[in-house]
Image 1: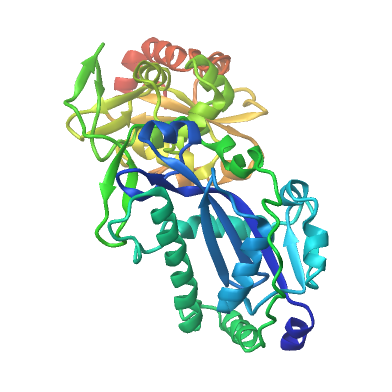
Image 2 (image 1 turned 180 degrees about the horizontal axis):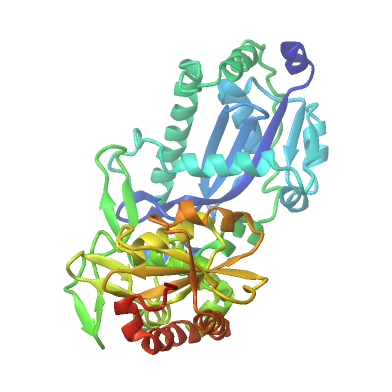
Length: 461
């Protein structure tokens, strides 16, 4: 049934974009970029962008690609005819060529041109996910193309020609290997059925010049990129290409206002910040604003996509109570602070960091007399030799029921004096007003009961 369907209707995705991971450099030739870079930033490294043209068999991992410089784009009709003539895995021209709306607007005549050779062009719906997924897959695969034909030729024209040969070689290798790297038995069967189809060779067409207009849509992927970071060129003996990698040679440690600016392979500040922000009583946007950055900049930092300005990072660390522990060689949560139970794994990670691996006796507190807070439950993280932090857990929430599992060595429920309980509630309320109030209010709370922590007098007898 599947084979009959393939024989009756053959479909290809056609996509065009500025390559995210491949550029040309006058000295290095084709350069692979490990992390995407904005085109204006690429110019600083003398990198010239390339246009990626690709075709993918709908529903199968069979792909063909070619490239040009941005200054010398090729006509869509010429690219398509070359692909359908040379790429064995495409099995010639399809019955349906599916494109996105950007290509349709850039080349209004493509529908009529393809109709002359019995190819129906269809524009994918804006909600269509498979076509953009095919483009993303092609973009990702570009950086791993082996530099088999890239010898000593570094000129733009010569390097692109070698790159196109490498892309065709990659296509041919996969076709001849019957896509052995595919794990799904069902997909392998469909690949075999597709490759057994007779080729539908296209009718030659006379080239009439460029049949499309370039536009900002070619590099729409730039809009989601974080600010650029220092990068350096690094030769790679495996694939034969030069890579542009994030990072630079680490200078000596810098000490500024009591802060250590750490240059090392392991910097866990972003990971700790991400977990703390997820447990902070205020929203991430409020935390970012207090630190003098945007929410996007905070998200870029916590996801490891972009660093923060040194002084901004110091301010953020002070805001959240993050310190560098020289003995451990990493950043730690100093506390004390008020936490809000929102995300289980974030709370678990923050607790284990605060308690140095669970060296604490956390317990939920309730008033010995009178009613408890109807909205929140309160857990004291009682650490040995360190001031306690407080966890606010919303009543009725699923995460609250799992507090005993998330906080190692949980010591159950303790009754406390009503005035102490009311102080905990009031402290959490004040600490939640704004991000900067959190640690200040928690420290003031700790000072009020400094001797009681030593004597454990806050607990009910």
